[in-house]
Length: 193
Image 1: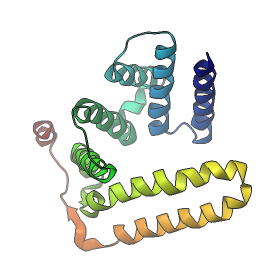
Image 2 (image 1 turned 90 degrees about the horizontal axis):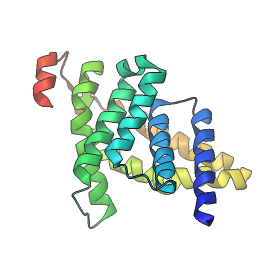
Image 3 (image 1 turned 180 degrees about the horizontal axis):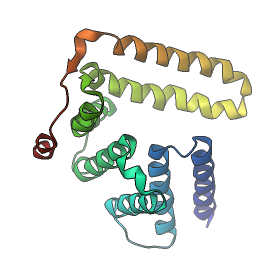
């Protein structure tokens, strides 16, 4: 009984978060996924993670068909699909190994889309990606939540975010790790997948 109130609170929080993030596609995908999973669990409806991801994608496309042409939509749903499909079969002994595995899979899956959009990619993203995930998960996200209770943490949060942004800009400017590919033919992309 108490779990239903927790689930309802999570759904309200996620709906608020969608509004706060100005309906970001990746946030919409993640929030709709969690909301539908909670609703289906409460109502004892049996849907797989792929079913829920598909429902979320279809709803977004019905509401806004042009989302299909946005890189953020394509990456978010394609990478989520692959991660749901392939990572559920693996057990990892450490969080770092799991993050690197997921990071490499996400990088490889998104590579043709990113290269087709930017004509280049940075090899450092494979190495740095998992550290950034840990940085957000263990430091920035908890401090952001604590900031609602302790507003004095706002300045600390600002400095941490600023540090993150500076390191991203610094690493992206190391040109020796940039691989310039140019435009990729659609047939090559289809063969890749």
